[in-house]
Image (cartoon, rainbow, N blue to C red):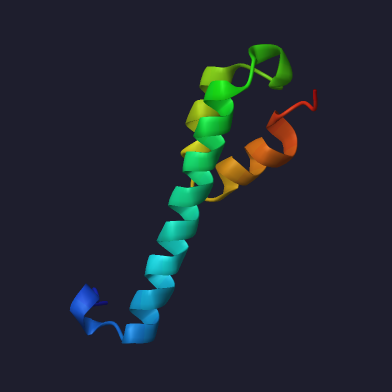
Length: 72
């Protein structure tokens, strides 16, 4: 199986990849920002573990936003 290069992709495929990357970066940045500003008692579990989990693809930030935060 040969690997495709960026230049081999269609403009629509490039746009889809760029959009997915922007969503991933935006979610991770928002989650890390929230984690950094949120007091430890308002986070379920250790903050360092959540910081690592956020780095895991799209699943980490979504898990943090849905499960990791306690409401004040």
